[in-house]
Image (cartoon, rainbow, N blue to C red):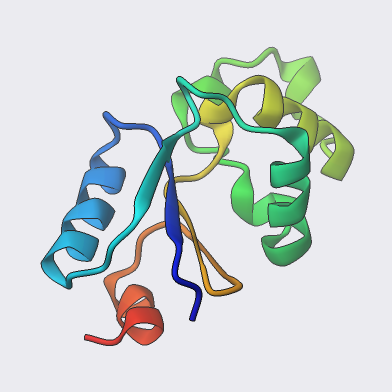
Length: 118
């Protein structure tokens, strides 16, 4: 397993807090990347899409996506979804956790336990 675990998301997000609390409680060292304040590179989003698909990464239930004009929501494809997520990282489902070549999107305690043990 990689020595570096990175959890990407937004500091104020409740789901992010649950994920960070889980990692802390299980003694998992990690770096936190707030992509709302620091941004996210297109190459990173493209790599995530290759691992998880844009449909999994794009948070259609979030306020940022719901506020988009209808014209931007219809006929979405990979290229359009990536452009939206890079331009407005709040549209990326949270958290995105990278560790040892594994990418976890969203927080499910049972999946974290499978990856980290515990």
